[in-house]
Image (cartoon, rainbow, N blue to C red; front, top):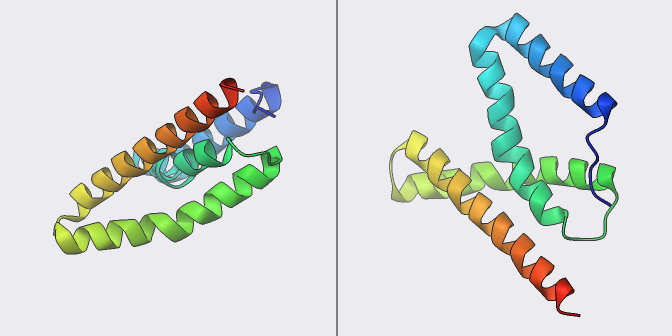
Length: 112
């Protein structure tokens, strides 16, 4: 089951973005977009290859992201003592892993 961006999803996303931009300004908007990109999207792409419901993928990806991403950033920061660079490297690593998992499973299922 693929996520369909119908009107309710777009309205919900726009309400969230407007709320955070009005209440917290541009930094709040950056925070929400950063949370979605760093904690949610890569793990959702990984879980999207498995046969789970949409709501399960959303909840699991958020909590897996909350558990794994800070740990990965911490350990990269031990090797490379720059917090900003550790976050960028973690984002690149997780995104590459999620895209390779999607490519591997898509290639594997299309060969049958």
